Amino acid sequence: MQFIRYAVYFTPRQGPLAAFGAAWLGWDSARGQRVPHPQIGGVPRPVAEITATPRKYGLHATIKPPFRLAEGRTEGDLATALSDLTQRLAPVVLDALDLCRIGGFLALVPQGDTAALSALAAEVVRGLDPLRAPLSTLDLARRRAPGLTPRQDDLLRDWGYPYVMEEFRFHITLSGKMATQDLDAIETALAPRVIPLLPRPFVISDLTLSGEDEDGMFHDIHRYTLAG
Image 1 (cartoon, rainbow, N blue to C red):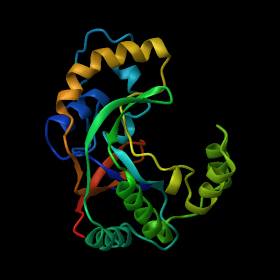
Image 2: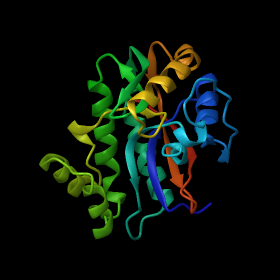
Image 3: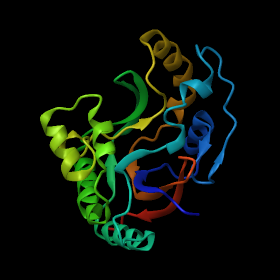
C-alpha cells in the first residue's frame, strides 16, 4: 500500500482497550478496516458523529506528528531510522491512564510524572526530522489559522508542528470538540465502559509507525519495541 504521510504513534497492543477503542472510533488501524460502532445508551449524538474527527487516526497518541517524506527518502529509510532510535530509547512507565477533558474533547491522559515521556517524544521528533519534507505554504497557513503563540509558531517552522518539545502533551483522543453539555453526557456514558480497561501502571514499551492512505485513513505499518 502506498502512503501519503507517515507518523509515529503510541497504539495500545491487542487487547480489551484496543478493541473497544477501535469500535468506539469505528476504525481499526491495526487491521486497516472500519468497525461497527458499539451501542451506548445515554450519548446525546450518534457515536459516528462524536468520533468523526479522530476516526481516521485510529486509537493512538501522537509522538511524531504526520509528515510527508523528504524528496529522495523512502519508507524503508524511515523504518530504519525509527528502528535505530527505538533500539536506544527506553520504555516509559507512568502511574496510569485516566479519562479527561482537554479543550472541549475527551481523551485518555497519563497520570504521574511525564518528564520521561516528553523526553522520549522529543528524541523521536528530532531523530526523524531529517526525513521530513518541509511544510508547504498552504500547510503553514492551515496550522496557523487557529492562532499560535510565538513559541508555537517557532516550533511549527522548526519541526513542522506547533505542539512538540515543551508544548507536547500526550493524549489519546476519543472525541471531537463538543459543547459542554454534550461532553457531560458522553463522559457519563463512556466512563463505566472505558475506565475498567485502563492500565495501572501505564507502560509505553513500543512505538508504531503509521501511514496515511489516499482516503486519509491511518494504518499501522510496524510496531517497534523500545529496547534501550
